[in-house]
Structure formats: structure tokens, C-alpha cells
Length: 437
Image 1 (cartoon, rainbow, N blue to C red):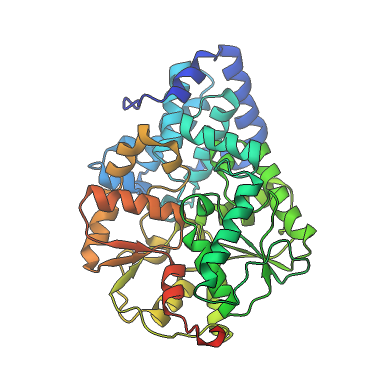
Image 2 (cartoon, helix red, strand yellow; image 1 turned 180 degrees about the vertical axis):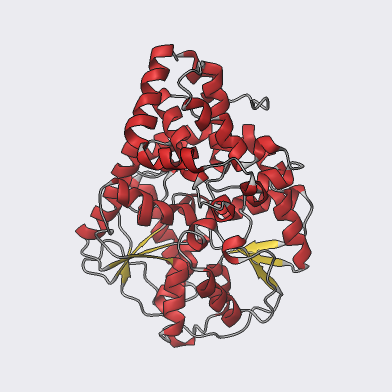
């Protein structure tokens, strides 16, 4: 059992409403009806060898504590829930929720070390699904999901505030490129550009930079004025798949309403996982109704089609962090490196890298579980801080919002003197803008 219980009002108050029958019914729904054959195959195949342990940043950072190993987390949660003789109490559910939401990033690195390829992240998502159905979820991430349900974005941003943000960034950018436009509600545009909720709220410079890149490349693009602009998804990580489906549906329907030919997503990993994969499949689509690509793919296409050119090189030595959802999940690691090498003079690989790189420890909704769990998250990623420090470079590029949040926290805690940049930061700074000046 995990005895590291953290005070989280969402978990504590949720558990007060549990009854034996409610727990039994939810366990049956998730583990017998919604899961079934895939879970049974994993349960019968796992030989508890522990080879997955060396893949987990929590295990490696927590003095090889077996309770932080992937198989250890599954043993404390899923295996117990599948035991017909086990009495599942409210305290057990609270403990399982804490493990599932705050001690696993769903990064899937462990599945690469399992000799059978067992997807531990999949099993942990089942625990999250169970906890959602029981109403035992961390307060902070649940509040974010509530924002999704009310506004269709995770930051409680009203429609007029969203439009104001776009027009504000257009005004700012026109000081640099006087003819620049951020087209809103343009019908039939080639590209529908979507971002995550925190961009207009906290990182509006990324919208500015994207607008500059789009205008330099002379791309036919638009952004919507209505809900559907936010591609992020904390409902997926809470385990609220019904809400996740609503959000994916409105995102695609907005692109279809505007008759756009392709969706380009900003630099976010989990949103791409949701929109391209998990959310679309939950809706029963074999392929998304509108083609969709991540910003890394988009930038790579622009560079290789000659629509953007390198105006100057970024001079400081850099390294590159591989976001789990677009590297292990989508294989964009080489395209990202092509961009880094094109725009940066001195690129130093961290080790391990590409699909074997360590997680930022923020993804999977873990950073969204908020301050009560920050200490576990930071202490659980010492291995990443050591990896970054070993590169000896002053800049790490990470094309994912959650990665920025996680890396900022460990750089600060472990006193690693390093800046974090998006690929868009580098490209915006170094592209040749003379064609539109």
C-alpha cells in the first residue's frame, strides 16, 4: 500500500460519499464492461518481473522504491481491484486515485521496457476512469474539467475575451509586420489553427509568434471566434470520457463549419494525443473527420517546402526534450531535430533521447493536480534534472506546454541554470522576415 497520502480536498470529500455498493457497481462497469479482453490479456501476461521499473522516472528518482515502479503501481491498484476476494474500501479508492492521478504521467516509457509490451498507462487510465465515476478526483484537475464542461476551454475564458486576445495580438504584431492579419472566422481557409486554453491566458506571445510565422509563410489560415478553439483536454486525464467526446466533437465541428481543409495544432503534446487519437477513437472515428497535424510537423513542412527560410542561426548551444505524446506517440523526433539543426548553430543531444527520453513529469494531467502534489512531482523527476544538467548547455527546447511547466519546476528546484524555449520561439526569432516587411 501507498502510505504517502496527500491532503487533497477533492479526494477526501469524494470518498465520504462512497458506499460498498457504489464501489462494487463502478468497478464492475469499468473492469468488466468497458475494459475486458485487453485488460485480461495484460493481467494474464504480466509475470511481475519488474523490468519496467528502470523505465520509470519516479522509481529512478525515489531511490528505486518499488512502490513507485510501474508494476508496483498496478499491483497496488488494478490487481487489487481485480481480486474478487478483496474488500475495496473508500480509503483504498483514495489511495488508488492518488497513485493514478499523481504518481504516473501515462508517458508509456515503461511499455518499451516490458518484454511483452504491456501498456501500464492504459491500466492506470482505467483506475482514473473508476475514480471519476466514483467522484474521487483531485480538486485542481477536476476544476479544470468543470471549466471545459462550462466554457469548452480549460481557463474559463469567455467568447469575447478570446476574440479580444486575438485582436490584441494582431495589433501588437502589426507593429512588427504592418500588413499582418489574424483571420477570424474565414470560410474555406486551408488551415484551421487551434491552441490550448493557457495560450490566450498566460502565453499570448505564442499566438503572436504563430501569426508572424503564418504571415511570413503566406499561409491561408484562420482561427474561430466560437468555442472549439481550445484543443486541450483535462477531461481525458480525469477519466470523464463523455466530456472528452463533447470537446473533440465541437473542435472538429468548428473546423468543418468553417470548411477548413486541415487542422494545425500548436505546440502541445497531450492535446494532440486527445484530438488525434484518444478523443477521436472514443467518438468511434477510425480517422479524424479533418486531417490534423502537430506544430512540429507543420513547421517542418513549411521549411522543406521553402515557405519559411532561415534568416540567422540561434547562437546559444541548445538541447532538445522529446515530449512523450508527440515522440513515443507520433514519432516526430527526427522532424523536430531537423528544425533544431536548421535554426540552431550548436545542438547537443541529451541522453537518453528520442523515444527513450525521460518524461517531464508534468504530463498525463499530473501538473494539473496542483500544489498539493507538486512535491511528489518534483522529487519524482530528479533523474530529468540530472539529465538536463549533464548536457552543459544553457537552453532546452521543448515543444509542449506541459513539458515547459514540469521542466521549469525541476530546473528551479534543483538549481539547473537553463532557459526553456518552444520551437516557435526559435523559429520566430530566426526566420527570414524580409519577404513581408
